[in-house]
Amino acid sequence: MMFNSNRVRTTEKIENQFNIVRTILAIAIALGIAFLLIMTVSETPLADFWTLLSGPLENRNSMITIISKAIPLLFTAIAISLVYSAGQFNIGAEGAFFAGSVAATAVAILPNIPTIIYIPLSLLAGAVVGAIVMGIPAVLYTRYNSVTIVTSLMMNYVALYAGLYVILNPLRDQAAGFEGSYAFQATAKLPSVFTNRLHIGLFIAILVVMFAYFLLNKTTFGYRILAVGNNPKFANYSGIKVNKNIILVTLLAGLIAGLGGSVEVLGNYNRFMYTDFTNHGWDGMMISVLCRNNPKYIIVGALFIAYLQTSADTLNFTSSIPPEVINVVQAIIIIFVAANEFLKRWEHKKIVENSQKSLAIGEIN
Image: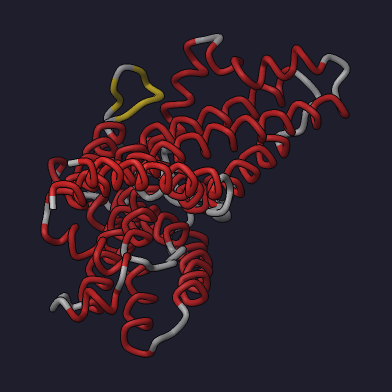
């Protein structure tokens, strides 16, 4: 048993090492293609490429921007990683994030609410609505075997257009001069920390990441989630209620995504001013794939994507490089990271060599 367990641990170690190598190579390839694209449109490609790599580190404001951009991504990436860990391709985090911000707005503009409960009540409203948006596709899947990726995509648009109707009709401030809600009550705004561009949502996001890691790795519920994701038939045979756990983890994911929308709108705005999706849900999907649904790496992944986005903004101000270059870089990275066969032969070869060595040692002993 000891021999077999050692071999399994070594195999897992090799797989983790190749996941890291695969990610690093994907980033390197993407940056190489980005440099080629920059060469075709820039008169100073080396300088612009250096700006792409180091621009956000050149001043304090850019570094604060990176952290600020990463905060909402932590919520959506964790939400996606939870449902993906359960084997569910629910892409409703975008709609849950948007709907959560609308729900938080509906509470944050109300007058005469006791100051001490303004923020908790606003955040709770966003979280509950987010759970509903992501939870409906899970219920449809478990009850009617619907295709989750389709129903969750449709729910995104239900959340978008229903939310815009609420904002542009009963909650619209006609005196604002633009399409926006009434202003938030001052006590509903999230307090700033360190600087007026950061807020306590940073700590909430970090706590959410820690909670997700603990949940998946240290609890029986987390074990059930992973078991359902790895092999639902075996999980069901083992006595795990597959459908129940799919619904529960999806509701939790929606709650987190909706909470993220609430934190973003209450931390950075004085009123609701979105007119479309914010793309935080889609970026969260990208981060989850990049980090292979492991909360341990979500913070690094969110900071990396926020860094690229800040680089795009910097390039846009200092050169003629279109920000779409960064979108190309992100897409290429995800393509290679998600390509399971990328470096698979080399990985398989190393695993076989390790198994042969282990067998030889076992025979000697």
